[in-house]
Image (tube, rainbow, N blue to C red):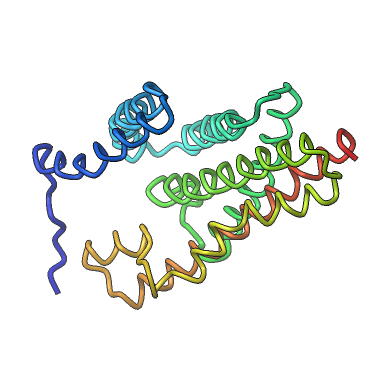
Length: 235
């Protein structure tokens, strides 16, 4: 089996901008929003380039405190971004989002680090930071969907209990769809990356099962906690 990974040149990377350019044209023509998508793409490029350098530095520094600092920044950023679709952004909502994402994500991450992988040392950045990133981002997106849907349902005159049910189900739709589709429709990121790197597909499958479970667990717990925080406000 070829264990090397193909090097992607910056020039070749431009090919994947072709479908993105089509999306940009459609997005601008349909929404009349000329800034959001460009800003999002710019942020993505800058953030990924910077994190590339940051991770290179972190991987060479054996410091649990630095890793914990990075994870803290990731959590704070996730809680702020999660509230982006919500129109009524009260300070309390940011706090609720942070606590919800923190509990759901950190609990799941601990199960993975100490239970599934038994990392030595536990703060091994090559594993901990990418896994934490997947968990935090997943919980962030789920909370964001739930928050936006709950606000919409409440504004439409729905009761808190009904709105909570609708919001919880909506937040988990992408995760449940992934469970149905994985291995049949798609080979998700971690599994694809490992296979491209030459890892035995059966080993890659185990890692992907871990990822699927941690995605569902962190999202379900985080969303439930966030929605429960809002009970006193809307019930």
